[in-house]
Image (cartoon, rainbow, N blue to C red; front, side, top):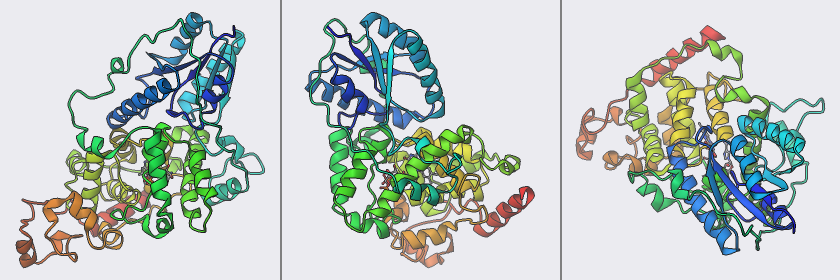
Length: 465
Ligand SMILES: Cc1cc2nc3c(=O)[nH]c(=O)nc-3n(C[C@H](O)[C@H](O)[C@H](O)COP(=O)(O)OP(=O)(O)OC[C@H]3O[C@@H](n4cnc5c(N)ncnc54)[C@H](O)[C@@H]3O)c2cc1C
């Protein structure tokens, strides 16, 4: 009888396009093993809840085809050798994880296992193409997104591997832990709104993709408008691996029409983020452009509290921060506005904002989050220039003209006219009275003045230029 193969389950909680699981299941008994490591970066409170829900779904999917999810906790490098010993496995397969710390540890582990005669096979399950395949002619990584995009677009994207439909598990092993033992589900039920919005699992992800495709012709114009909902909301599923990016790419491309490219471009931003993170691993914590190391930030805890609570007096910022807190998600345009406000109007370090996002987003993703924050702060590759400082009121007027998004998340302003909902502090007394709002009581006055904040930010930038 063939010895079993261990498949490490990480950010790939699905049976479709799961190369490691698929190839292992062709070769005999398989042990799908999830080892929870508490020290892993990027799994904040909201993502832990999402992880729990998706692990539960994945466990059920595996059971439906005769498999078992084996669960353990600790450090992979300590636990995996124990599992190899007790199961008599001859091989370990995994889909590569391109987070620098994990990738480095995986590489070392693979070398150690090879030395002990254990076969290790690794597969592409996270990106359209492995990060090292898109490089300049001289072998250096691309630093500009458009060049990366053009280079990737010339390559063939491999088709997804077939779904895993049957499974042989080992007969002599039991999971030492249950999902509950991982304590991922919070004791206090603060996640009720999230639970009502986000359905876990690959079937839900595929349904979302299909629904989105029906409206993809509206994506290019509509994606920047938070109230319109023309974006895919697939990021939570991509982040946890409930859907594979290659499946999304081919599903969209196979239904070719001229409206798909703006969406494909965003999927390629995701690949680009990973390429940048892999080549600049310190960028998670440090600005890529070294001059920003000298930038003089403020550490004002009152401003910070106003930002995280959605009480800045700038309705679009407050709507975004409240959406994030309630749903574990925030629209991309609003992520840019809130992040810009924190780093440029309040001069609070982007790293602090990035950590908050990682703690509160269910789609928390080390590469995309780092890219997003460095882009906004002006310190990353191919970033928005520092001197381009978003005016939150103008952004709000442009992308939420009728104030629908604001009314949803800042309900105390819902009776304000469209004209003043973006900037209540400029509304005449009568208008505020009619809307039933007293500034400073029902809704805060702006915590900073836009013009003064802009000037202060530009002066700080001058200091490091
Ligand atoms: C400050 C900041 C922080 C961010 N943090 C994260 C994060 O932690 N996790 C995360 O997945 N995305 C992050 N993003 C990127 C982007 O906001 C989200 O991917 C997007 O809002 C998800 O919504 P969607 O699935 O409807 O996107 P769609 O517009 O439908 O795009 C489809 C997919 O493309 C990818 N994508 C879209 N925009 C970007 C982008 N700007 N950069 C990289 N990939 C992108 C995502 O995987 C997304 O699901 C961040 C952006 C900013 C500005």
